[in-house]
Length: 185
Image 1 (cartoon, rainbow, N blue to C red):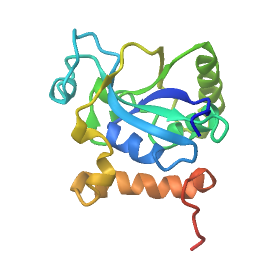
Image 2: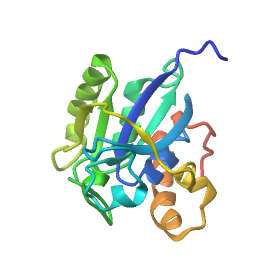
Image 3: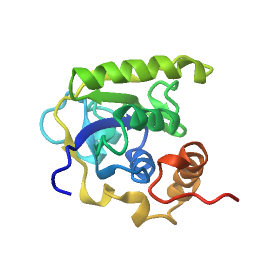
Image 4: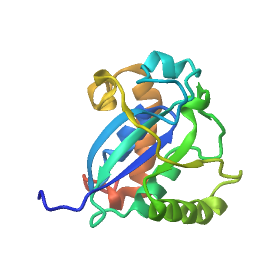
C-alpha cells in the first residue's frame, strides 16, 4: 500500500466543510486536509481572519488521492458538480472571496486537465463558470476542529441543512465513484 503513486489536488468551492464531506466519500481519496490558500496576508491565517474576508485567502481542501483509482479529471468533475461554479464569491449563504470557486493546480498537467473539465462542463450550467484557476501558493492547514468537520458534527444545524443535501446529490450523481456502494431505493 505504501507504493502508491499518490497525487494532491487543492480545491475550494465555498465552505471547506462541504467540499471535505463530499470528497471524503470518493473511492481513491486517501486523505483530506481543510485549510487556506491564495491570500495576501503575511503568516499563517486563522479561521476568524479568513472569514473576515480581509486576508484574501480561500477556504480549500487539499486532497491526496490515488489516480489509479480515481483520475484527477473525475475528481474535478465531482468537485465542479457538487458546488455552484457559476456563482462568484459565494456558495448559498456563504458570501465573500473566501468562498470562491477555485482550482489550485500543482503542475501544468493539472492545469490542462482543469481547463478541459471547465470547458466540457460549461454546457451543463445555465450561467458561465467563474471558477478561478491558479497555481498553488502556500497552503496552510486549518485549525484541528475544522478537520473532518461533518463526520464530527453531523447533527449541527449547518451540517444537516447544507452538507447533508450535498451528499444526497453526490450519491445520486456519482454513486459509482463512492467508497460505500449505493443501493437502489
